[in-house]
Image (cartoon, rainbow, N blue to C red; front, side):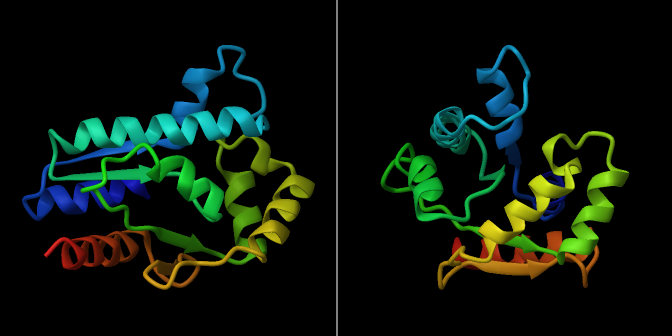
Length: 160
């Protein structure tokens, strides 16, 4: 989804970059084991913030793809941004059954192919509190391209 948003922004004349939080985690884990180390996730979110800040100096937009559903997760990322940069958060939702179907159909998925893990993840999301400025999109009801246009519209409105 992050790449689709970046492509949409590029089509509108805003040069952009994408940072994938999963890949940042993998950079920090040479064993490439299951991504279950919370300390490494915290480090990855902070590093993603630093990377985003560096890219923002070179691009008009930076899209960071990853999970930022808790205050702690957002703080890990935002604490590495310069004060003049403000992050906008987009939360993509989909019901559990659809998430499970997508997970088993995607050969790149790791832990989310474990139904118990995915179910526990969804239970944890039930307690997530979206910020009042968050854009929340149900990807079970819209296509990737429609969601990407909605995100780009929102980002461009907030940057005006």
